[in-house]
Amino acid sequence: MKPDLIAHAVNLLSKGEVVGIPTETVYGLAGDITQPEAIRQIFSLKNRPLNHPLIVHIGNKDDLNLYAKNIPQEVEKLIQHFWPGPLTFLLEKQTTISDLITGNQTSVAIRMPAHPITLAIIQQLGHPIAAPSANRFGHTSPTIAEHVTEEFDKKIYVVDGGRCSMGMESTIVDVRKKNQGQIVRQGLITASDLNEVLGKEWVITNAKNTSHTPGNLPNHYAPTKPLFLFQTQAELNEINQQYQNNVYLIYISDILEKNNVLTFKMPNEALAYAYQLYYQLRLADQTNAAVIALELPPTHTEKWQAIHDKLQRAKIN
Ligand code: TXA
Ligand code: MG
Image (cartoon, rainbow, N blue to C red; front, side):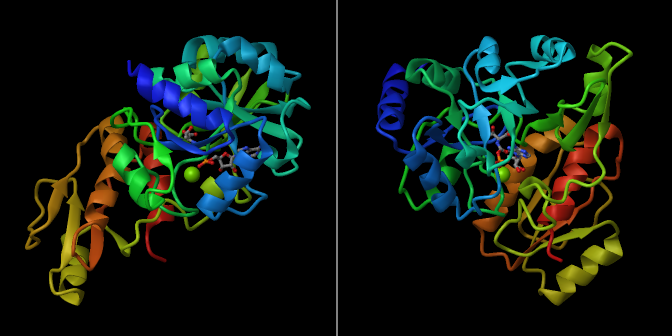
């Protein structure tokens, strides 16, 4: 690992500064949860409304009990199976979590990330870190350190931990009710994945109305250039015509007839697709193309739901 980078990040965090950190999902904008100034700084750097709560990242599974209470026993099974990893639990908060972090809600979102550098940072700091995705509010999440540096005009120190291995945000599951959990933000861990690990008496479903959480706002994850989604050759032709072929094309099917200079072919498998999605949107954003046209993946199985969900929120309305 990189002991110098880790020590530097720990030093900055302990002084109440905000630091960009790698996780397996996306890069985070981290602050020590015990330092209100750091937490305020996260909201202000992101330009994020104060009522949109932050996820708390812990360095040890057992620490969950220090920050959440009334944890159902079945949650333990999920922790043993999925942590460290891209699964966030929504639980009742302890008083160790400030109202600033939870936007005055009685719940707290907690996960243990699966990146060795960030786990070492949290452990050496001796406190959890609050970390939203390291992008301006509503913008595409970053999956490499350079994207974070650009996003905040080099104002913050970013720990370079390489490219995020998942490339998409964690699944958030509300487990505050007995015997039933609700996924309030979809991710690459699906309801079926969770139900497979749980006993029959517990069922996880996808929540229907989650419009109050920012990850679920209609406009989110969006690149700077307009993003058009298309399904047919005719739709692509129309976009190309409108923008004189000055269109960055992100496609998936082989049959497409392309006049575009700038293109990227996406993989056919959901995890591989998610790994590329934000990364490619940001690469496309850095070019001179007027707009981005993205071919909707034809598959709608459960593993693809989170991808379709993000695409619908990232597109131009
Ligand atoms: O993979 C991830 O979860 C990444 C990495 C950095 O860990 N983090 C992330 O954070 O996606 P952020 O802030 O971009 O999204 C957090 C989501 C928001 O939709 C927020 O509303 C929801 O979590 N959330 C956090 N605390 C909550 C709470 N107490 N109640 C309801 N929703 C909460
Ligand atoms: Mg985010």
